[in-house]
Length: 213
Image (cartoon, rainbow, N blue to C red):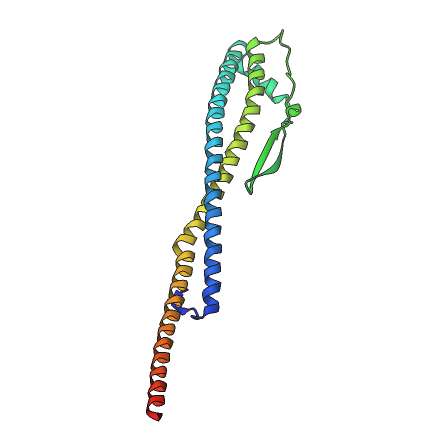
């Protein structure tokens, strides 16, 4: 909307000035929100990087132990043990709110992880190591998924916040500032015209009084 299309009245001048103050306040709040979101993102990104490296190391150890167990027991035996297990792994999810942003919370139900389906005495010790390492790695993998979801949610909110700030800077604030400037200019012109008319009127009245004398 063009600012020179608004009705240049004193009432509108007051209204647009008040709305300009409100929009400026909203912008400051959005900028504060953006800064807080950036702080959260940096914090979670650092946690994610640390946990990501831990997960990589844990999975490497698990894979090495598993391959040693395959060498000792044979792939057929390992596959039979794996096929005998039920798919009982489960996770639960909920939501928490961080600075107005809904963040997923994911928890692994550790009780759903199957117990060792083999005897540590009769099988390769590497197979037992692989089981223990995988159990620990699963907890960290779920934590990593939660952190990634958190970062995605915060980043999406940051983008939305930045778009709002951009819209205020490029469209809303220029409209209100232009409208206030336009109305003030028109009212000042009218005031000057009124002043000139009054001055001329006074001179005419003064001349009439003088001529009547």
